[in-house]
Image (cartoon, rainbow over all chains, first blue to last red; front, side):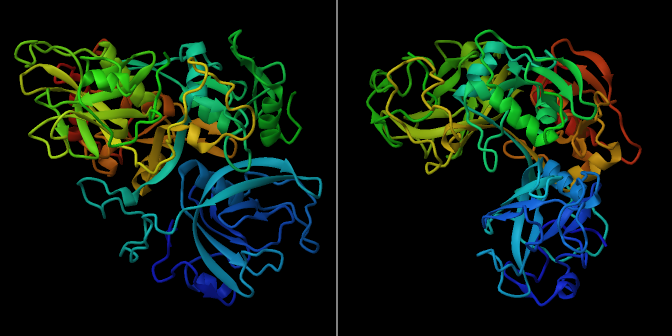
Length: 304
Length: 304
């Protein structure tokens, strides 16, 4: 059966289910045990937030969700590092990279004011805003995914299932695309601070030196070293901003490269130096933000 | 004086002005004659929509605004091609590339239901959603900028002018960045159609072959050949989507490269072939969309 990303027809937000079997039969979350439904190829289409992970945090419209793997099946505590290659975790990475809509189901959890008092409840669509590694309460690396609720009034209405069960690219037919069929994969933000940093470098990427030429001008992006927004809360100050080309911006924001304290560029797969960040003499980069970014992707194992 | 991007303190949306001198004195639009306030370096901070260009279109919340230059000063008709290097046009390009907020002032225009009946009126903030070239009514190349209104309730409230008149990156101080200080520079959208196209290429860019590796997966972007949204109205179908790396996506969307009918990649500055698009045998690309994109950036002068 094709994975459906979005609401399931006939299952409005707030629907409740007695158990995982009923949840599966309703088409809301297929696996009977796993908390994440998805693979690295497809992306994750749904998760169950059940309070089983000690590092999970539920703020209502923002959920910090611990990835899969590394737990002792008896005690539920972490006994090994988690891996992003685990299919569930890879599914949440893909959901984040593609901007997919992920159904969130909450299970009973006496510690959470947002959980149902019994059974399971479908609580609507979320997107994976960011992810990163940290050392969990039990001392092992966990991957955490920050999911943010998509407002219920957003154009994500469930449609009746198509007759074909595979992805069918013809159902829309040609003609102007409806906004309701697209999701946001990536948002690049700017600010006065970002513009100042870009001006110092004349739009040349601090990692690779490239300035993208387009009709009428040069193009670059401001990358916040310690990310903006929850749960990172990096500031929008020049000491926390790099001028990067879009490719290196994607690499930096998604943990393919990180910086050492002396501002060398490190390949995260190998922890090898691949170059040195170009730094204008007016541009002070604060090591605390560099360390924050590095900790997010290396949990302290990386080259400092 | 530093250019202010956003509302001017004390000048709410709907404020009216007797003439351009009063408009200038209020700080809403500095030039007394030019319709565009801005430069390629700074970006454009304001425009006056006065109905002087025969190719302009005002739909209220969407304005198709003709760039500066090439007009006969007596008749107001185009007598030469317009150039993106004209400072006003370059300012609107920069505003589009950076997602800047542009103040829009409407002048009297009996043909427009959105224009004031006399004088000038400040109508709020717009962003430059897209731009492109076309042959105007008078037979010469014009550059047109599609501006879309930013909702008045959006967090763009005017603040009292700072004591310093230059860009001051310290006024915020460190601490979590407020959303109100940032603007959206770029939004990348995805869809089921986009995911199908990416799958055909395993995220390898059809222009350069690169697949961006990030923690946990590969990253690519779906580029609509004929752009989505007003005024292009390209469809979200596989025949209109390319799988590109972010850098080539920016280049393609902003007219640095275009495609010939036989799907060669052409550098728009030189009209020289720089390579051939990689095309999967399952992926039919519709020449009509390729021609539409090419026309937007070359007005028919490019290599077909």
